[in-house]
Image (cartoon, rainbow, N blue to C red; front, side):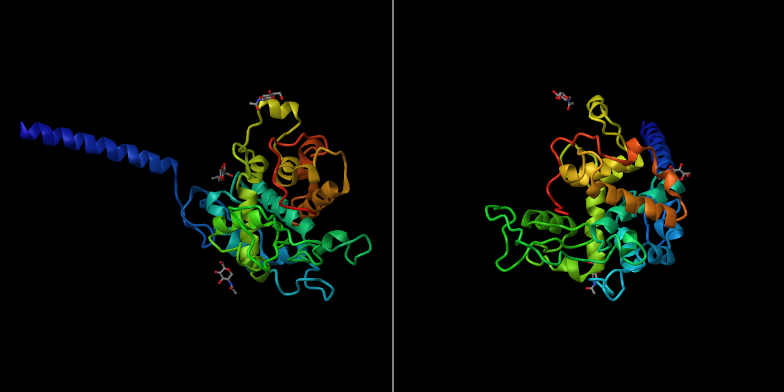
Length: 306
Ligand SMILES: *[C@@H]1O[C@H](CO)[C@@H](O)[C@H](O)[C@H]1NC(C)=O
Ligand SMILES: *[C@@H]1O[C@H](CO)[C@@H](O)[C@H](O)[C@H]1NC(C)=O
Ligand SMILES: *[C@@H]1O[C@H](CO)[C@@H](O)[C@H](O)[C@H]1NC(C)=O
């Protein structure tokens, strides 16, 4: 009697052990690199394996020029430190070597174009001036929406654009602060005082759906997102174009070949070249552009005004 029960218990235990070791075999967890720990995404190459300090210097070669506006602020180490929080979730670690390089180029392409002070006549060309700014220089307003009870403005605080993918408005500082566990509503200046925090906020925005039932920029870029019939009818296809649609909506997309869109694409292509991937890997025009895409519904919040 007692013997039978014990045998049965042992059999059940053995089955459970087998099942859980099967699960472990599927979800292999690694801690190969210091910058990517305890996730299946860390088993492959991580960002610092294929994107090194000298490449960061190439991409952002003019950021410490005397006329730049955030001299000494941005560096490679802050980017890698910030990315270490998101690599275990797939940032720059998804889909194999080529896709990983492309995702870093795409993310930094957005950052470069949003922080550039390069113009047609700038030395080194207009694309060499990414990370020239870490804040909006001459805000025309304080970006405070007064009737926001969830994220009320702190008296005296200004919510102009700051960071690597600039954050604007009290509500967006509030949401970002909750995500990063920093009191950005009371201290919006953290985003222009600490490059790691600035990159962290930008990568968070890249990795996170901004609206319910929508994909993240990361998801549409690496191919995690499968378009519905409606998406296809609206010309929304996976790729770089859809990342612009999600992040900036009508400021950039659905309006034909406009400059704000072409500027972001040019930075992405320039970085692909500099990283040795080559711009021909950027995909078809349809994937790269959002000129003809209808906006995701509802469209992205007005995070960005540039
Ligand atoms: C790891 O790399 C292999 C081969 O490139 C790839 O098939 C796999 O999807 C990668 N793992 C993850 C989690 O992206
Ligand atoms: C910048 O922020 C990071 C992440 O919150 C923190 O670990 C680091 O100490 C900060 N650096 C400075 C100089 O405050
Ligand atoms: C697809 O588009 C149609 C027409 O715009 C709309 O009525 C319908 O709700 C959409 N379906 C989904 C799943 O969004």
